[in-house]
Length: 182
Image (tube, rainbow, N blue to C red):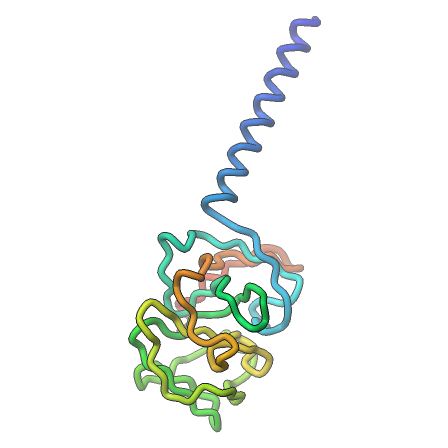
């Protein structure tokens, strides 16, 4: 009886240690949990929600529609979560009267936004996204400081920590793969 108890304890401890190592490796190299602070991504994400990002900066290249976590130093002194609107070489133009956003002269359809893009900051449009960078905006265009402002500016792709693939909200888990919404 004593040998069975020792064996059971040993096996249980082995499973627990192995599970801990696997989880640690998974979260160190493949995914990250990041908390959402503020309302700049409403209605897609709200303050207090969490996102799970996949891929690290070493092998991730931002694409239109991706929701990304950014660690680029900025005047806000915090990581930010925004949506990629344009990538290197693309021209971004915004008609602040109608709220329309144009990429390379074509209006993009943004079903995910909270409100039209009528706020402007200190960036003069049109702008062309430099090599190795992307242009990002929050889904809550009236409540987001983003690439329209030199406070954030263009995002160097090396500071993109990854693509947010899953949102954890009060309603549960939801996919954040919205590239098809364009």
